[in-house]
Image (tube, rainbow, N blue to C red; front, side):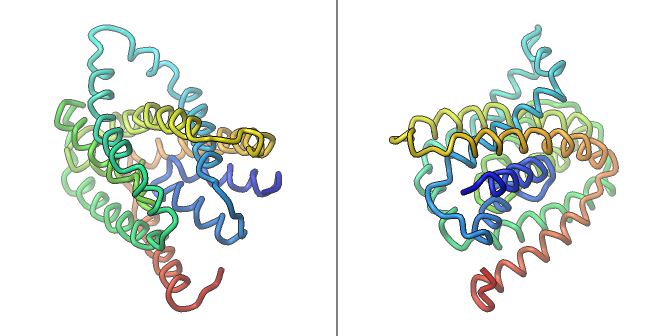
Length: 256
């Protein structure tokens, strides 16, 4: 991997982490197209940490409010994190195997269908349910499902909140806050798995993280505007087309 590839992957991660299109799926896709080989999981996780800086930059006030009584949002955040945490601990090896298999097109297709349903539900049945136990659990289990490559974490959690009938602006903020413990946990886990730190391309990691943080900041701002209109059909069409192209590549045409 060279510096330019690291920057491209960082931009890809930042732009797709908070838009409902699956950052992990796009990273695998770009890495395959560029022919980047090797154990890239640590690098990918560090790119996620880069986007975490964007979350802190945009939501620093909301993050600080988590530590103020009565700690309701903090409690919901912990509750919503448990399903994904358990899923990753129990099935870590199987999840890593999914990234090595030909499952991307399935994840992209699932996300496309999910977003189309979400747009219909959000516009047909606009509700104003506050963040509560039900919303937190639904969004938490949605985040657990999104560990599968190609399924968007932000898309799944926001969709879960819409299905639960919660306020869209609060759904978006809570979805972004939900990324914090998952990314931090993944970062620590992958750091513990590294056996040869000398083999880590430190400069590429740093450059990729900076690119991910800057592009992630812009993506958050864009998503906060889109969530108000519950306008997901274009993302759904894009992912449907991407699923078809990825499927054809894997089984028919072999582009890369």
